[in-house]
Image: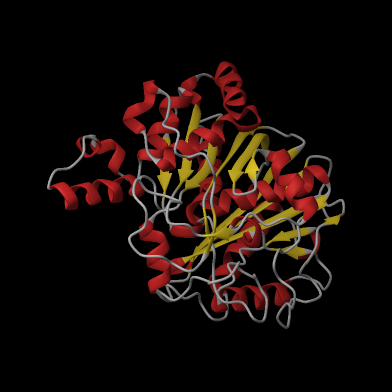
Length: 401
């Protein structure tokens, strides 16, 4: 496929606001995870404690500006923070000036959207017998609330689309945006993902016995599960060549199990092959792998076997979830931002908290950050239900690693 230019990108996570905070954390090998506290999300403290660590973004108790009060919830507050970081909203405004508001698409991924606000409303109902005012705003309490808010905040009039395929959601937005641009329905697209901490996610994963009581350790032989995080990550894509580019994308569906991946990684491998084919590259051309690496037993086992099977020994790879936590519907876009930073700063992240990688990936997994120039990076995003997506990014100055 013709590459798309990455005109701007940013993220807000437990590491801080914007690219500089991420680069500082990568350089220091710093994790943003911390023990979950009773007041870390929601209007009221948690009714029961949960022994786990999370990647929490501070300062989300501040409401949205008054003109967007009808969209106010934790998830949209986090999205607003992301739009302000690194002048991203200004970059979008300049793109609107070039192409027109109707020619800029918006494709966002989320698995929770505004569900935290719905949880708060149900608590009020349970205590008083009356819903608070916000449930009278139906648009807020839908999965599309994130896209509706961002579209209004940025003044976009191009095609809006919400993708919700669990943890692959905001990787698949890149594929959807590329199709919109290739088909002539848009000249540019704002893509990204936002997911925030809420009870449904934390206690849902706890019920599946997947939540770690310690900071998560991706690909470690003694890993004990995931640490949930929250993040907002955004990328602006446009037609034409540029310094950083989206070179390819691949998607697949295992259709194997509701929560477990295909044990042979067949779906993940199919997504990888499609991404490489669109990029016109082979596995030997990839200089860095940003792995999904959730620290669950099955995901890491299957992903490690896929990497060992398809990539040459020594290709550097890492998972950043030990730094940010698993940000669910935002994980794909956040992984894309880590990959773009690796290309832009010649800085490969380490795999925080991991000390003893499991067999098959020891010679590839970076345990500490590394200064290394690479020209291409592949970012993996795999989800419940076997929804897989692989993205390939590169420098505009040539292909190959």
